[in-house]
Length: 124
Image (tube, rainbow, N blue to C red; front, side, top):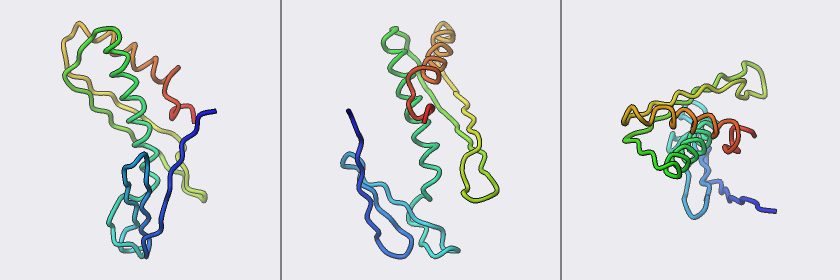
């Protein structure tokens, strides 16, 4: 069975550094809750993982179908619960493609394939 493994180290106050495949992600809390705002708070990284996962799927699918786009921007918003544990109740993705109009249907198909079949973060 395949697996991912990360390591997280407390750096003091509210800062944690996480090593992911040789890359360091710095997480911290805002000053108002005891941090130094030296990095992102952790929860939005779930949205980051979602956008990266679906974005990579889409680019891969379009390349395999020999369709080229010039730009892809993905905006993800997550609605948070009001009670503990504070969690995402829903997430909304907006895909903004720039490229030749002839790629429009292929881009839409790639989004659907990513969300329905390939993006494991969407299914988590």
